[in-house]
Length: 101
Image 1 (tube, rainbow, N blue to C red):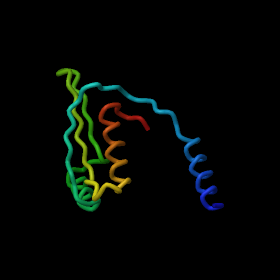
Image 2: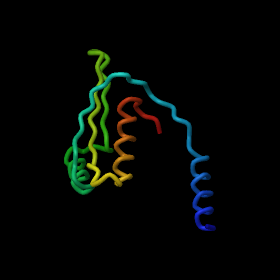
Image 3: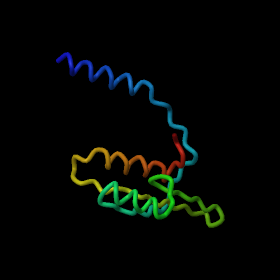
Image 4: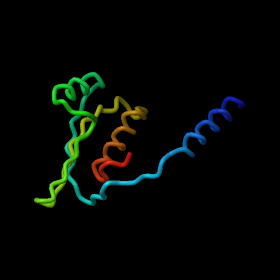
């Protein structure tokens, strides 16, 4: 019980330090292209080949009034794969709001 209480205190402390979200833009409509990979190693190999800096690349085209975002993601291995599901949500949020951290 004491360990559970300590874990909860640490979790609440970490949440209290979270920065507010300040978005770059707020897209209501965008096209998202997803590139799936079966492992982190496979993803990193692809990123190194394309000289990409991160897990997503977004581009806004004001001249055509369209936007698209291309995501490079590791496919979750099962329904309990919280890390990869969190990454999908994180990168999706970048697709519709731009830089937020």
